[in-house]
Amino acid sequence: MFHRSSSGPGHRGSQDARTNRQHRHHARANPLRRATDRTRSRWLVIFVLSCLLAVACGVEVGLTTVDNGLRAAAEQARHRHLVKATTIGEPARHVSTRAGAATTTARVQWEFPAGSHHASALPVLAGTPVGHTVTLWVDDTGATTSAPRTGAEAASDAVAAGAGSAGLITLAGAGVVLLRLRRLEARNLAEWEHGWERVEPGWSGRLRHGREAGDD
Image 1 (cartoon, rainbow, N blue to C red):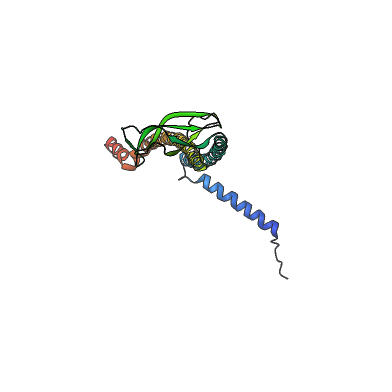
Image 2 (tube, rainbow, N blue to C red):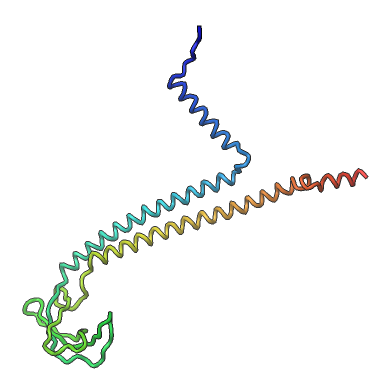
């Protein structure tokens, strides 16, 4: 009768585990893979991890920045108002070009809040006649101010902040890894030169020739 050996799942699993351990042992025992090579690989892995960390931090900074920017824009929108003003003085003769449009200054007046009158010299388009209506932004007291920030500006700031944070972390990680790799390479070259000094005489035949000359 023939006896068939058992090869169940447990047996195959133990064989696979033993094979994996043998492969790892051979990889560690590989004479061509020096300790410096393993160290270099570890530092490269650290650099990859630092890049992933930089991306994560950049996203977090960007999200925080855009959230703060949108809140600030909403707060500005509640306290800044677009009102109509009327020019009450002749435009100045000096004309400058901004954003492709010729501008000058003229005295204008407006009313905000209700019953509160204001007047000031403000930029207007060149050639604006007296009595012309212009628009401007004011705060709750009626003083002139800039337009409230928009969501697009908040998003742009968020992208810049996130990219800047990610870039700084990546550069810092790259600097540390590059410094360590340079030191590792210097140590590797020193070890190689030391090893070469030991094997070169026999490999090149200098040692053999010297002995033959001594025998004479």
